[in-house]
Length: 231
Image (cartoon, rainbow, N blue to C red; front, side, top):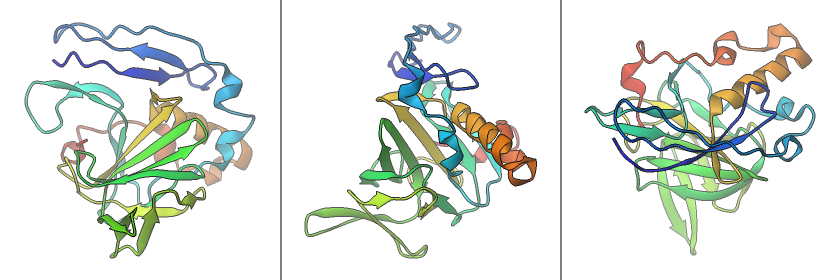
């Protein structure tokens, strides 16, 4: 098992407290040790702030791999840190920006495959395994997905809910899915907690009929979609 350490920010169901955890694994049977530190709630979210957020993928099928430590998705007995939440969707399904912000990185040369990172205040959200690739023009990098009609530049301002790419199989993956990662103040955050709070507020504000039950439950279905897990 890897002894690599990660600082992890997490919260309770209401995201009122984010903790900073340093997870250290000694043996295959040992439990992660988490050291907690408080972050002031008003620095993380304002009243009703989650109402404006967008679900990040169209044609959603299932959550296939949770945030945290897991056995290697590509086989073997090794454990690895999975810094996001995997969402299965048909290849080519559009990916939407969760929160308005600025593109700080586009890339296509690591396990994340073709990906984009967007900064929204203290938040960073990462979208991996997208269709397309990265090109450069006049010293500026951009993600181009010609089949999906998407072109996203580093430094570009992206509104909430805008289509920023499409689900692919680039990078380390065995099936089409979106790997969605979140950080707050450079600390990892479990996206499932954010989605649960987001759906909870939206359900209260808009009524039950406007909330997708399958999406809002954030239940991992690895046994059904084992080949969709990856980075």
